[in-house]
Length: 463
Image 1 (cartoon, rainbow, N blue to C red):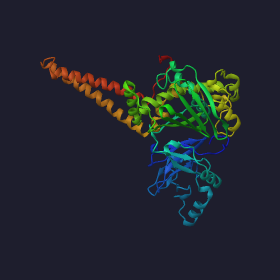
Image 2 (image 1 turned 180 degrees about the vertical axis):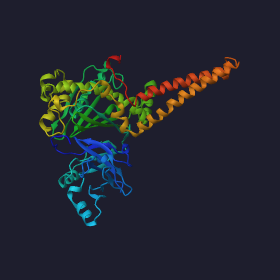
Image 3 (image 1 turned 30 degrees about the vertical axis):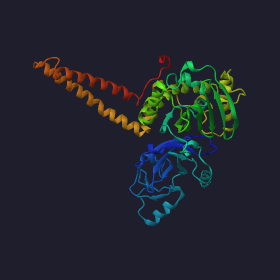
Image 4 (image 1 turned 90 degrees about the vertical axis):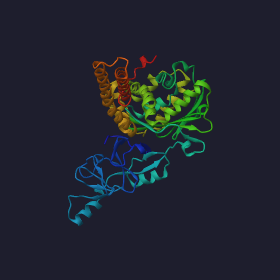
């Protein structure tokens, strides 16, 4: 386990429940702690420290037994949903077996969990005090999802592992002015920025802070709720963007996000713009397409920029931001110097000293990644999303089939022509046209396949 400072513990949303495999253990990391999530015989999800008390083997490499226990793959020790050892196959004597299983040393560290709004929330402390604190603490939820008469999801949940520290990701999300540039033609446009005014709605407190932006085109409010929840509300669009940034390991975060829309205040647009917006809504309603074409592309614009940026800051120490960040506009600091980047950095200084996995120097971070590795969609998203995994499997099956069909159609055209069939006949022209269409389909599928593995994002190429 990583040597990390113990945080002021809270619940963290560690996984999208529908993306977890209930048939087997699911591995993750939270605050540097290896965690295994699994569903027991009663149907309840559990979160354990991912190591067997016997010889410290990873329980995520084990299996869920037919009796609903978690079995270690190394020596077959079994554990119930509370973390208690129920079976040690190597001890045949019943009395000795009962004594060994009753020992606290045979138990796995079991973390309090809560299943809310489709997420599995984990309180990373395995103790009676931790259980009591977790029971008394409410997770930071999307309030709109509990108002079904007024609000409904616009998108499904999305999750991506990011090779960036939580503090850098939050700083990025808390800065609305980067979107028109980092996400040009994806989520904004460079020409949209005409000057943005930002003012505080509440100053930083231990619970978080709020601010409001006015870009001249629309107004929006932003809220940070400790330890990891960020929310933008866009009244003019009847839309909410909710983001959780979960620190997983030093230099890594897990982003979980979703959009929600107001049923009654969702503006209709006339003409072509209305058609475009309706198409976008249909696209966002398809989870695979929304992930492949939209959500991953947004984060591709951020990942390598932020991965390099935080290393340049930490090369001079985490507190060097005040010296090295030149932020002359209120879009960075707000009128009272307590908004956006300044608000987040101020909150960290005043209230976030015990936040976990905050790197202090460059040496705290893993080595610099290439852009290829920092934008790897396969390991960061697809391997964690069963819908995208299934789409990739189907594409992999379709690729050789379309190539074989194109070759067969071309062969048919060749044989027909060789046996004297007219060139414009169905036997020749039709088969040749089919071969061309199948070859184009193969090429398109191959390009679509890249969206689940790696798509390079070069800002200089986005005109």
